[in-house]
Length: 425
Image (cartoon, rainbow, N blue to C red; front, side, top):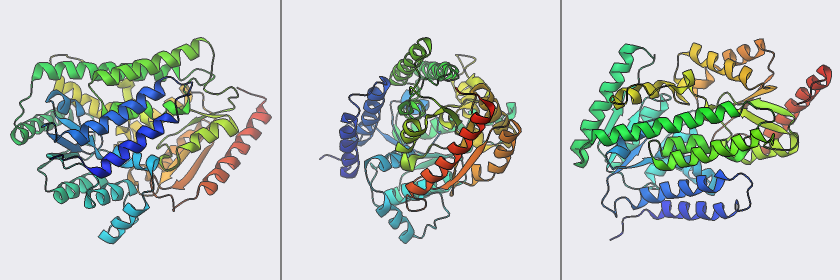
């Protein structure tokens, strides 16, 4: 008897239909990116039918370990965020409220919890969650595992990046492997793990090469690619699929830089997004491009700390993965704040930004606590900053019109600065 989840299948069908809308795109990687998203969720939904253990997990867990053991990963937060693209999530948020989850809890985790309550995920064989990148994640991960009655493992990510904490995280990964071996009956092939980790680092190199190219004026990366690289790195880390997509992205961006072709013909403002992209209203970025000539020169889903150089000894794959944990995009908001501020300031300088827009997700205590510090550091550089209160998932918190009105006022301010200085990109 088929064990595929009908709710997941419905979302997959909607994503497949959405892909048709992009057939005429002039940004070549878009279609492959959408195809990989569909294939990822299809593999997860078919895993139990095909006799492969399904590992549900929270964000920034070491996906490479799952692929090396021939386990099928399912990243719950990314799947939940994609629900915004294919339908209305208000009924899930209502379920979360009825379950007793207050609005102060991150809406992404209220959504994932509600989808678990309503069995809108495939049934996992095991559940893995970590303390990255916020305190909501381990609480939500533990709750989802209990609701699904799945064996679970918690990865305790240290706060600071030192030799001691690196060794601690290596031990955490070793214990995770033992847990997965016991629960699934699959043994780790360490030669295969070395190859998977090598591919994962190649994907990192491609991201860094693309980010270097993104510093060009005019900005070469169309808004369709802003989330693509980060999403594929989260879902397909360590696979040929990730390397293929990121190679295509790098080559497309390089071609545009070589031919001085920008993402849009009328670039006016270069923006830094220090935190999140507006998942609740992704067309907003397209609107900023087309209506105001505002491009995203750099964003948090692609910023690597210390240039992402986490691969050192090919014979120590777990040590390499442990180092990646502290350097990959998103981990900077885990702390310490000094590292985050230095990273953002350098990206603002390198990317020649005119301004920064911070979407202040009301449920995020990690970044919410450091918004003032980020704003102060950017203002020292003379970079105007707009902070917009929002909710990543709940569209009832802030209207589209209100957000666009605030952005229009910010662009008027940037226009006045350009007029005063006589500088036009």
